[in-house]
Amino acid sequence: MIFTRWSAKFPGTQRRGAARSDRAAPRPASGTPSGPPETAPEAATAPAAVDGTPSPPTAATTTGSVPAARAEHEDTAASQEATPAALPPTVDALSVHEILGTIPALVAVVYGPEHRLAYVNGAYATVFGARPAGRTAREALPELDALGLLPLMDQVLRSGKPRTVKSRKVAGGAGGDRTRDGYYTFTCTPIEVAASGPAPDPEVACVAPHKGVLVFGADVTDQIESAERLRASEASQREAAVTLQRSLLPQELEQPDDLRVAATYQPGGTDAAVGGDWYDVITLGAGRTALVIGDVMGRGVRAAAVMGQLRTAVRAYARLDLPPHEVLQLLDGLAAEIDASQIATCVYAVHDPNEGRLVYASAGHLPILVRDPDGSVRRAAEPTGPPLGTGGWLHTSGSVPLGPGSSAVLYTDGLVERRDKDIDDGVEALERAFAGAAGAPDIVCDRLLRSLGITATHDDDVAILVLQHPERTGHDAELFHNAALELHGGTEAAPRARAFASGVLASWRFSPELHDLGVLAASELVANSLQHGHPPMRLRLRRTDRRLIIEVTDGDDHLPRRRRAEPVDEAGRGISIVATIASAWGSRRTPGGGKAVWCEFALPRG
Image (tube, rainbow, N blue to C red; front, side, top):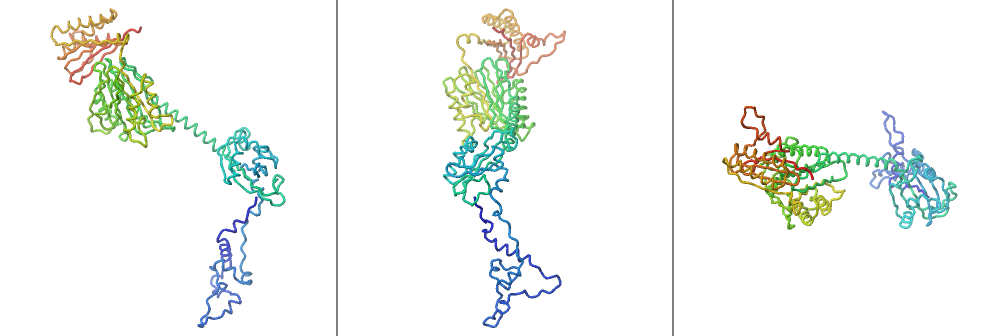
C-alpha cells in the first residue's frame, strides 16, 4: 500500500508557506527609523523608464505582502537572507504497518480473487487469534465466512466500490472481554496492494501488485448494548402504560339480558405513550342498557388520566338514569373543569328492549353504524354536537331502531382515519366491512380490525364496541316474555293490577314464593302511582332468562324516593317494601313527561 505526499499537492500550500516565512523575518526596533528595504544588486541598478521616472519596483524589491509564488523568482542572495520555514511532517515517514497496527479496530488486508491474506493487525489477532499469511480467506479467515463477508468482498473486488454491513455479532468478541459477545460494523474497501520492495513486516506476504480488499471492523458493542437496554426500557415503559390504560377500561363487560356485547382495544404505535380511547357497558335496570365510547385527543399519561375521570363520571351519571343528551351535558361541564385544553369526543346510547330502539347523543364523535336484519347498514349521524369541554351547547338526543336481528358498532377514529385519505372514506370502508361481518360480537370485532388493516404497528389507538340484539327462537323464546296492562285510575285499578299480575306470573310458571313477591311488588307500585301520579298509567311485566321485571309508568314526573316512615304514618311504606323484597329498584323520567318506577327479582339459576 502506497501513500503519496498528498499534503504538498493542495493549491496554495506553497504560498502559505512563503507567507509564514516572511512574517517570521525580524522587524526594526521601536523608535528606529525605517530605512528603505534592502534590495538585490540587480534591483539597485534598475534602469529608469523612458520618460525619466524611476522604474516601478520589481518583485525582488518588495517585502512583507509579496505573494509567495513570486518569491520563487528572487535571486540566490535574497533567498539566502530569508528565514527558512520548517516543512510540516508527512505520512511518508510512517509505515502502513505502524498506522494499522495502532488502530483499535479490526483490520485485515487480502488480495487477489481468492482473497489471500496479506495482513491482520493486533486488534484482529486479539479477537480471532493469529492468522497465517498467504492463504485464502476461506482457509485463514473462517470467521469472515461465518459473518457472511466473503460474498461481500467478492462484490467489492468486482465493482471497486466499498460495502458496509452493520452490527454483526461475534461470539466472545467484545474487545479483550472474552465473556461477552461483541458487535462489529464491517466496511470492505477496494485497495491496490502494490510491490514496495522488501516487506516491512513478515506478516505482509504480498510483494506483487494486486487488487485487494481492506476489511475494517469497528467495535460497536457498547452502542448495541445501549440500544438494547433502551429498547428494553421502552418496552417496559410501554407495557406499564398499556397496563395503566387497560386498568382504566372495564376488566369485564357487563352482559345485558337482551343484548350480546363485545369490545376490543388495541393501543397504537410502539412508544410508551398511550391514548385516551375508552368504552363501557352499563346496565341501568328494567332491562335497559347504556353503551358509551369516547376518545380523549392526544397521547400520554395525561390523556389516559382524563379518560379515566370521564369514564368514572359517565358511570355515575348513568346511575341517575338520565336521557343521553343530559348525560353529555353534565360531561361537557366536567370536561371543562378537568382540563379545558383537552379535547374529548363521546357518544352515549341507551337500548330499551321494550321500545326496540337505540336512543343516543353524540359530542363530536363518529356516527354509530346500525345493521338491519336484511344486512343493510345505515349511519346514526344526527344529531351531533361539538366535543366535550367546549361549553355553551345544548345537546339533543336522537334514536334509531334496533330490534331483534339488528346489530350496531361504536368505534373511535383510529379505526377509520388514515393520513392519506379522507375520514369519510374510512367510514364507508367500515360500512362495507360491517355489512359482511357475521358471527358473534367478538368475532365481528376481529373481522373489522382485519378488514380495516389494523395491525400491531398501527399508529393510533383503536376501540370497538359491537352489540347485537339476537332473535329468540325455540327454547330461548320461551324464556323471554312481555305483558302489559293499561290502568285508567279509580278504585278498581289496584284490584285489576293484582289480578293481572297474579295470572301472568302463574302462566310463566314461577315458584309460589316468587309469584307472591311479584304480586306484592306490582300492588305496591301501582298503589304508589295511583296516589302520587296521574294517568296515563301502565303496568308492565317482563321476564328474561335471568330476572323478573315489574314496571309502572304514569304521567307525573316527580320521582319517588325511599324514606323512613314513622310508626304513626299511614303511608310512605310502599317503596320501602319494594326495596326490601326486590333485588333492585329504581325510577327515571320518561321522554313524554312522566316517570317509570321499576323493580327486579333475580331468577334462580338452572
